[in-house]
Length: 353
Image (cartoon, rainbow, N blue to C red; front, side):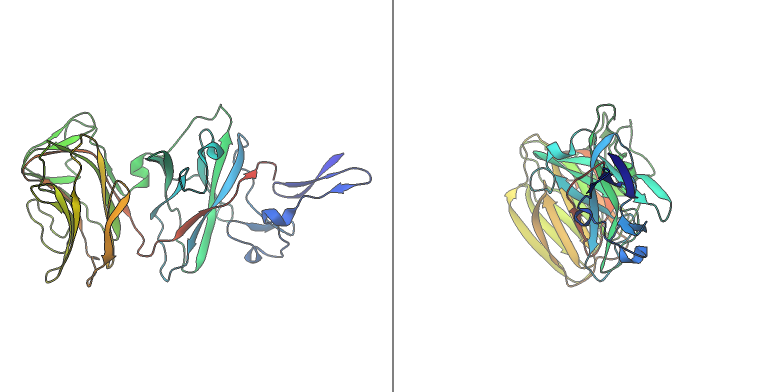
């Protein structure tokens, strides 16, 4: 019996009298005369639409990750997207196995290597969060990402630093605030990977953002703590919330309001449940893109909608505390497409295919 090469990653097994032909159509090996006839992430080689050669044979399987842009706008390179593993995600934790790797593989452009990606916990499962390496035009699908799974034990887990994925990231690991990152009013103590905003203190990012999502991991210190705020605002100065802004704003009892203001208009939606003062970190997120605004707490959307005005100017991230201390474990800001694409993870293909 001998193996005969057909296309990259594809072989037949033959004897003197028999030819064992794999079901090549099942794995996307359709016949072609040019790459334009092939699907996303494939090139025409030896008359077949073929995926890229295997990146690293220490991995036993791979999944193609497709970014589908059905919208009317380009999804820009640098946008931060994700897909879930476990839970309601397309992949099980067992499928990904040890040390999965997300790889950007564009052989036409001569680019191949790990994408900027990291794993984030999502309760009893996790998500792969990654930085989109190329623009995705309207009504097209980007197919040059591959999730390699089922690694051998010799492969060490390796993920990108958060700052390489998010446009802005600060985990407050130093002994003081990074002067280039923030303008400050009040007293803010930094120690051991946390920043504590003392009562009547305010942080504002120096950097400005457009079409972005800001995420903060916070804990309220004190059982009756309230009157704090977090989100995007037009002002560059502490102690100022000049419109336009989109903010979580809590009153003295800790009840959260979602406030979205322009210079002349306001939209306020009330979350009747007080913000948890349970001694645990909680994740607040505010996303803005044009007229779209989404608020969430611990991954659960608490308010969303379309405003009658666009939050499309240069916005700073604000975080303040008025009558209690607030512990901040991390702050991150990433680019958010105005129209979110769909991220689809295809079934696994083993290395010999």
